[in-house]
Image (cartoon, rainbow, N blue to C red; front, side, top):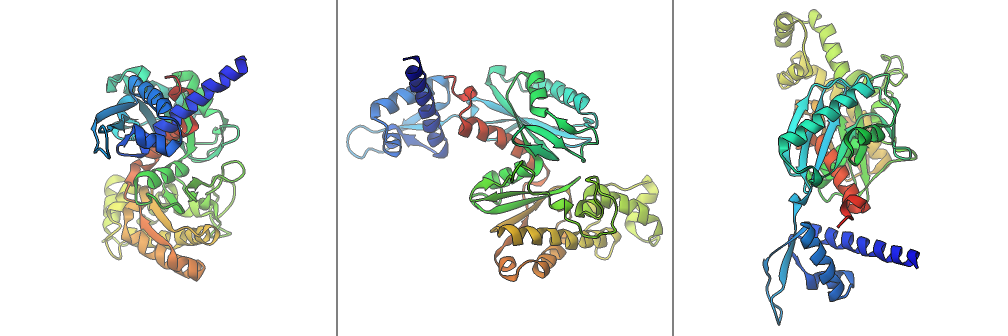
Length: 410
């Protein structure tokens, strides 16, 4: 008997989640329409909607048009019934903020958190999370969870960061979800940063409603989030998309993965900045970036991007070279997965056409012709916060689509 009661309660909760998701997907909808879509009885729909309205997840917003009889009451999802924290972490900076359940931001800030030592970095992050909640003045009971976008190999079976060279050598077998859950007392949902960014592009960006797409993240590392048939491609453990470790030169520099000549070791942000600072002393005295280098003592990636569109300048040539070789990696992805679209994001996307034009030429040269002809390749319009929004989307999707207890408590 107790098992039957438990099953009935579970079915009731799942029906609520199903109805809530249908309401979320529509601008407005009536009880009658819900009954038609789900096959549930009008009485069952009325009971579920009554609970959803009472809990604040759904609101009634007036009357719709009548098709005979009484005018139906219009229902709408209330995105401010709960909130999600999100963070994208890198070695030296973390983007942290809070959004409502439609990923509308209330607060986004960058914090100079050093993640080289995992425990210390995550402890500092937890402290800032608590400060963000206080600053937002949101009732803590309305915080439903937190999404984290993290670079490196995140094992989706064990929920552990297996290795993250871009965060530091100590990032091996780090149970990031468990640690932050203990520190914050809330549900934590971790995703690889490029996968998270791909979800953001798919949900809000140029990739919306493109079920076969790739997001290529050009930042401290180079990696890709791949969506096929509307779902992320994970592979065996969740390590897919590591295009940055495609070897472009056998005798190239040592990569932090342990191999030599990886795309990331030559054309990710740290490699480009290092290359520029080593080569600028040898440049002509009239080179504008050299003047900046002499004045500051070093140049940053922001400096490189600032001069990227100065034709024939050092930065222009550097980004054109990078675009060509990155295009080789993207051509391999296109040959493997045949996506409808590829979106280029991350810090280096700020170089714009200077990077994109040789990248497109390289794809045409190296990808299978029929595939290259059909694929759409563009710069992402979501700029640098894509990973942050992706982290929020990861948490929102897990809560609503997974039906976790945080949304089944009503």
